[in-house]
Image 1: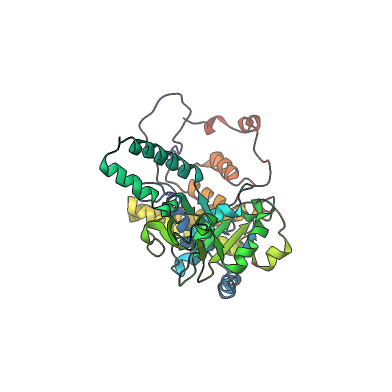
Image 2 (image 1 turned 90 degrees about the horizontal axis):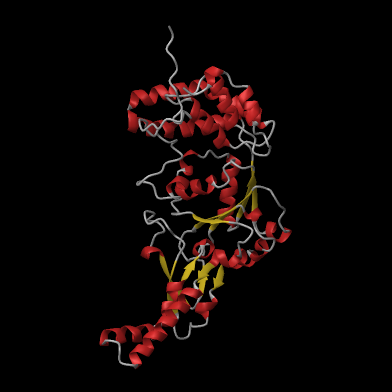
Length: 392
């Protein structure tokens, strides 16, 4: 009598409360926990698994030589943003400054943020303290603190934070690195607004320029957020701005990504180098999957031992070719992202993995086209479902 397959489901829709279950290990590309800096380490990890073509390497080098932004277009999931993290890691450029673009994004959002309301509230508080001082209700120490605050206009720096673009323009011997993500989602004016910055490599902060005669040096916060990144994390993420102006010493490596949802003005395109990311072919998909599997099973080996990791890896390699071909066939019908293939491989090679019709249905659900309304209706799903497929 053959052994019954293990039930892979955690949630079984039985209606009976069940505390006797354990959370399985996550995919290596989806770690969470105390050892992971939220939103930082997972992005950096892309550098370890992204696979580049020679033409892409050449365009990155051209952008570095020519001090030009690199505009990368391509379908979702082709690795447009992953390329940036690979460059940053190999060239030891420190933290990638990340600027996600929406329809409401303006040039000023990228350069700096001034908290005028916060400063006004502090000014009102100082005014109240001044009244208390005049009436003799403040101690000598409190009076001195009030005097220090009034006489130190440089405190305006507490209310100014450089944005990703502004931080990328800070002077340094080697270029800083900036990812402007999904520039095609921007307001129609933003690409043109970026032209002078790309040409000149400097900008002024009006709030600081106005006080440069009395306070020439003002300490402000930067957009760096990863204190573990020693290459770029200096002075706890602060910078002293001279005379209200920031000017780069080495033009930053700027990568802009676009899903191709809009055209850009010729003046903007003239100032950029352009690279289109092709959808990976069968050979490249094999390299991508192998890179992720290596990371996946290194993690599994640490958690559950070498034997378990080797057994799981062998099972994954056995179905890899099948799923890659299924992925390619499905991609002929509409857009798919590479991480959908990784999701499918992860789910069907678990210790407790779905089998039979459950397996095929799950693969189909995980490989749905991104540009189509392909969802099965509940009625069709139930009609195709046999009694043995139901959870137990």
